[in-house]
Amino acid sequence: MNLDAMPLARQVEFVFKQLENELVNAVAGTVTIHIRNNVVGKYGVRHNPIESKNGQIGDKPAVQGMTAAQVLAFRQMAVDSLRMKRSWTHGEIAYDFCVRSGAAGGWSASITYESNYNLANSLFRYQPKYSQQALRDAP
Image (cartoon, rainbow, N blue to C red; front, side, top):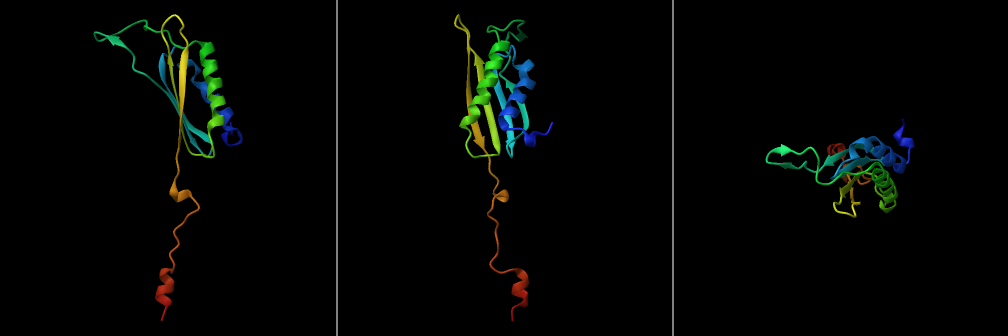
């Protein structure tokens, strides 16, 4: 698969499809996507800590994790949120999510964009006024 030819929205959709099994039943966490030249370089999920009681990890969490339908809605929200990204090609997108407990249930997510720049790659290049060779050749 050639990611250079694929729009960023399709790449983000692909990332969420790859992470779907990890996101189903996840209670909370962060999906992180690293971007370089508008191409997804690496991605992953950081799950919030697993709860334990008296040193024992419980078999069943207090809150049920995301359903398959919620993961699908999360993926669509992630793709739609790319409209907020403006004029940067290098950086990171973090999608924080959590499933709410209670009768209403539901889930919520927030998006953080981080743009990265590298001065060495910009158009600005230091050009000394006189080269060392010109100074040696001067009378």
